[in-house]
Structure formats: structure tokens, C-alpha cells
Length: 493
RNA sequence: GGCCCCAUCGUCCAGUGGUUAGGACACAGGGUUUUCGACCCUGCAACAGGAGUUCGAUUCUCCUUGGGGCUACCA
Image 1 (cartoon, rainbow, N blue to C red):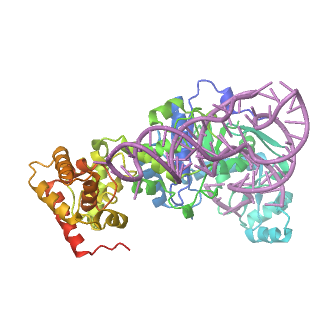
Image 2 (cartoon, chains in turn green, red):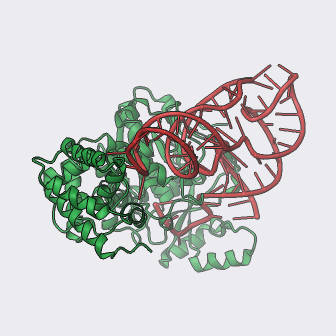
Image 3 (spheres, helix red, strand yellow):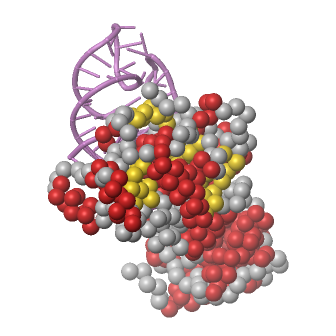
């Protein structure tokens, strides 16, 4: 028999969902996607998106990690609709629930020490060890005696007979036979609640309606259902989202490189990119679109569209997507961020000096469709802001190591110097006129000039590039290239 | 090991009881006679395997294989 989910019976109830990370490290992209799905579902249905910090493990939880979560969500624009709930502040409620279960006979005190359990587990050898209910069989007198002598105890749930069947919104009907679950711990010997108890009590208290969370909790769900039952409550709706995998199909983790959302931000990913990318990783509106806005996501999101298989995080696809958004970004949209990367580049010495805003804007407008990350403008295209210090060896061989190249570049330098002003048009005129005069194809001049001015063999249109570089830079770079060619100092190995 | 989940191009995402199985990333080739990691075009490339149901299965069922998850007094 499939358990009745609470929402079926509840009318005019607003949707309440929560993202419930534990503050033990980074906020990684898998978590962010879970948060995003929760957020989208809440927004789509006009419900509430809540945040709960699962810090019942006092040893592993840190305030720094809490801040990381808050910062990450804020950057993604996924702020909760109500104040975050800290699980550690709700211990009294958890203990209250445990006591109620004790009173009702759904739970019992276990005086076994961890060492004893460990011994029995080793004794079991290959066989799976499940708690042997040693303490369930204690007589009332034995229990009293232990309590009087102040023996510490944990509280275990008394698992009832019977299979557990429930409906998952993404996986469908899930069933587990009752014998698979042992009497797990609700309250530790030190009196703190375990995750299993706390999650149920808090979801109930927070009036959560839908639990949208990672697939890794699927196997725990039957245990939680047992707690709901013991508490006399109806279960909630469950939607277990498959995990995000690394390229090796293992659960995404640090060894796959960047996993923290903050790392992606600092690397230069746009918020829109991450929303789009994560929104379409494991979910789709049913068509084959690749680009989707936050608003469209809000309008279209539903749990039905969640994929039941796990997805690999494809870095190159994310990179491409970021390039798509960058290509569509106006300077003003990214000016502040560009400024930040420019500052970093100049402080690290790779830019020599901080470029002014007009320079950055001109370079941006010229190159925005070609960059994948904002910082590309200051490393791959740093020649826009400083004279090139390295020259592409293949380009040198092809465009510099030829007869008369130096002489021609020298003449062109003079031509450009006399230009007033040097614009894309006037520069082109000079090149084409000279090409004709020297009986050369324009390319024979264009390539060496590009190499001299940028050190590279590719890039935006040359004439536009020259205009943005400005007359002084162009002339200086050409002359410098002439010297280099004459001195044959190129390293073309 | 036990239990649970999953299975369409290398990757992401569509799709239908009958389709030339579609789009995108990546990759390869060509074009743009100003280049290029930018743009345009083309190509490459998948229904894991085996039974069953059916007139017909990629689609429904089962098994196998493979992958993932859980199996704590972690969450």
C-alpha cells in the first residue's frame, strides 16, 4: 500500500520547500542545483523557499561554512523567503519528539556502548550487522537500575514489521522490505539528535510540503517515513534529484577540480550562466533548447521534467554557455566585473598598469563575442592593453621570416604615424594602398602587422583592432617588431 | 557483500508501439580570399546485451551487465 502524501489531503495549502545543506565545507554546484530546483518550484507555484542549516553534527559544522552557503546562494540570487533555520537551535524540539516516541513505545533506550556495538559488528564478519535489539529485551528493572546508576543511553527507533512503499515524484513507486532496516539511533548518548530525527521534526515544524533533495537521501527515506508514522504524521511529497557526476562518472568532488560555486564565480562564470547551466542539467522543459533565462525557468519549471538519471558536469559546455552570455552582454552589464579582473591583472603585473575605462570598453566591444570568460580580455587579449612580449612562433616563421618584411613594416609605421586620425578606415586605406603599390595581396601586409601589434595570429578584425590600440601604440609596436626582426632574437624553437 | 536507484551520440537535452532517432557541446573537414580558439556550412557519432509481450519494439515486462547511492551514536 502506498502511503498517502499529506498534500493530497491538504487544500489551499501553499507550497513550502527547503534547501537543507550541512555546513561542513564548500557549497558545491550539486547543492546549488538542488537549491535552484527548490527555488524554482517555490517561485513557480507561488510558494515559499526556505533554508535550513543542518548543523546537528557540532564537530564538523563551522560558522565559516555557514557563511559560504549564504554567500553562494546570495550570489546566485537564491535567497530564502524566511530567516534561515538552524537545526542546532532546535534540539529541544528534537528531544521532545524523541521523548514522545519513548513514551509511546515506538522507541527505546539503548545502553550499549559504541565499543560493544563495534565488537558485535566485527563478530558478524562478512554478514551484515544490524542492531540485535539487545536493549529492547531489557526488563523494566534492568532499565531502572541502569538509569539510577546514571548510565548513558541512546534512543533507538523500534522498527515495526512490514514493507515500506512510497511514491517519489521523480522515481515513482519505491519499495523496501521491512527487514532491511535496523533499529537506528534517534538520539545519541550525548543527548543530541541524529540527522534522521532532526530532518523529520524540522520539516514537520517548518510546514514543508515538498522535499526536493539529492538522490543520496533516497535510501534514507524509508527510515524517515517510519519516523513520520511513529510520530503519527502523514509523510510529505518527496522528489529525489539524481546527483551530479564528474567526467569519470563518479560523484562530483574536489578531485574533479572546481566544485564550489564560489570557485566558478571567481573563475569568471556569470550568474546567468550558472542558473542556465544548472537549470538545464537534469531538468528540461520538454524541448531541446540550450539557452534559457531565469524568468523562463520560473515560468516553466515543474518536477515532472526532472531527469531520473544522473548527469555529468561538462566543463566545456559550461564554458561555451558562458561565452554565449558574454557575447550578448553590453559593456555596462559587465563593467564592474571587468574592472575587478583588470585590477587583478594589473596587480599581478601581467598588465603593467591599470587600463582606463574607455580602453576596456573599446576592447570589450571588439572582443566580447570571442571571449569565454571576462578575464580572457586581460590575458589572452592582453595586447589590447600592453605591448606584446611574446610572439606566436608559427606566426613568426610565417609572417616575419620573409624578405623585406621589416622594411615594409617600417614604412607602414611611418604611414600610420602620419595618419590624422588613425581609424579603422584610414588604416585600411594605408594597407591597401601599400599592397597595391608593392604588388602584394593585402594579406601579406595584414598578417605581419597583426603579429607585430598583437603577437598573435588570430583575433578580431585587424583594422578595428588598430583603431582601438591607437596610433601611438601601433607605431611603437611596429617599430619594435622591426628591431626584433633585424636582431633575429626570435625564439622560434 | 546486502538493499535502493539509473541506463538514447564521448557529454548535456529531446523523442515515439511504426521516425532517415532530433538539437546542442566537444571533435573533424570546408567556407568566409584579414587571420582566428569568432561566424557560417558539412561530417562523425547513440537507443548496453539477452529473452518476453506485440503484426511491429529504442519505447512495455523480466533477466544479465554496467554505473551511481545507501548500508554510522555523518549529514
